[in-house]
Amino acid sequence: MGHMEGLLDNARLDLLLAEHGRAVVVVLVAVGVLTLVATGWAVATPETETTPRMAEESVTTEVQTSVTVVDGGTLWEPDERLEDSSVYMLNASPELVVEPETRLVNETAGTPVTDGNVTHELTLRFEAARDGEPFWNETTEELNATPTVEDGVATSRTTVDVESYLERQRQLESELGRVGSVSLELQLRVAYDTARHDGTQRATTTVQLTDDAYWLEESLSASETNPHRIGTERTTQSRNPLFIAALSLLGTLSLAGAGAVVRRSPDDVEAARRAVHEQRYAEWISTGSIPMWIGDHHVSLDSLEDVVDVAIDANERVVHDRQRGLFAVVSGSVVYYYSHRGRWEETAWPELDLEERSAVVDADPGPTSDADDESPPDDLPELDGSEEFTSVDEPDAFDDDEDVWNQL
Image (cartoon, one colour):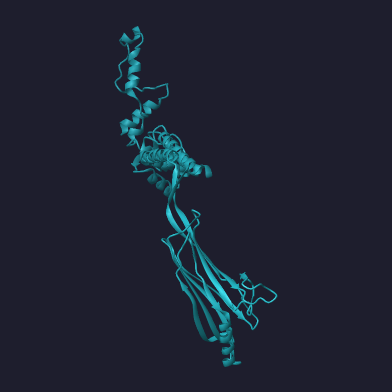
């Protein structure tokens, strides 16, 4: 069964190629040529990728603190300068110098940004809170300056009277009592503007005040980086080898397939269609020889399917006479048949190349015997039709065919 299905599939393929083989070949050749051209183009044209070139500007602000000792006792000498100390004694240095410094740098080039503007703002803010929720505040501005940017650096300076803030804190705590707590914060705000970027930086720290000392809990600093595009960069690299190999393989297979289709495609569409029908109904068909004189009536059908239908209805077999190109079902005295050669009589003899045969005969006529020129003997008896003629030799197939033709 599997073998029969394989034969049928081959016949269907032959029919498909017979009907559409030319179109399939055209498509395969077109695909093959285009893919091979694309392969050559891919090899000859490397892949170019354009990427943006980026640059970065950094803005960094740090706050430095310092004091000048006025009464150092045994710890420091008068007029001694202390910088960025973790704690300052109130009696030794009651005034705190705060210096915000902002640096503008082109990180890509490693050069300072000289065409920028910077504004420094410093404020001290008292805030009263209860259970962590603020309910009152007071802000004092200590610095609001726009220093000149020199070599990418802008620096401002202000002096804070720490003793005055300690007195204000004691006053607030006395007024609030146990209602809430009072805290003091040092707030920094930096606004900057360059040719490419602008922005704002903020930093805050708590100022701790006691009767003996003061300090900043955290250092004030802020930093950020701003990227910007300065152009594009083109890079060239070979295309993916797998892509090129796939194109080449597709083109080769397409052209090879076109050649295979040309070799496989049958020339006769009708013959291919008949082959499909023969293999489809092979289980109802037997191969044999069908005599010309069989049956009293001969019914010509339009297709092999019709002959198979008759065989199924009559529970008979279809006989395929390959020599006559004939499919027939014998049902009693009636022969139902189909042949691509035409009528029943036209299938009697196989197709012959008569011109070729005539040429062969005429080429060598052979010697002529004297017997051919002899006349029949004069002493043969004349027959008047009443005598019986008995032939010893059996009639051959040609005599039988002649009788059938006479009957027709």
